[in-house]
Length: 215
Image 1 (cartoon, helix red, strand yellow):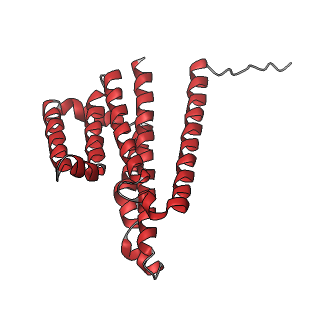
Image 2: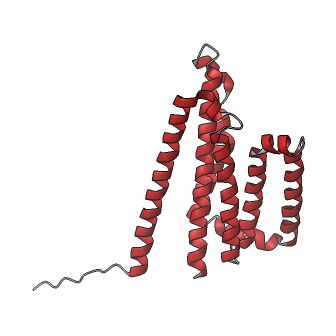
């Protein structure tokens, strides 16, 4: 008689696995909606949809600001993650301000965004100096988490790949008439938005891990 022993899955493991599957599904749906929206906007409105004051640029600012706020939430919910989360939020706040440069220059004054970024840099530099050891320890812990890989992927897409892939000379060689400028803008802004989306996802995953650790 051969006895068979059932290998049961523990409740925490079950919740972790299916929770991750659920979050991936939500991210996939959101990404699909964003891609469909960008396609629709390009067809219906053309280049204006991707202008500096268009919906795509606005959504990039919303993503950057949302990421910064989520990271502050991480800092409030987990003391060990707080130093890293605060510094990352400072970086994203600066990015959000930079993306809002047109509105700030028009509604406040010329170079308003530069002054605001300098103020934010000063505040977060003081925080870094006063908490140097804790910041480095917290960043080292963040580097061991899956969210760090997603964050770096988004950052590289945003800073490096979008600039190279959106290089005007490249598209000018492929498209002979002046339409290359339109294509270049659409491609560059689309890739940038993807980078911002990945960074936002990384902050949400960081928050999830921080809450699990705190509990």
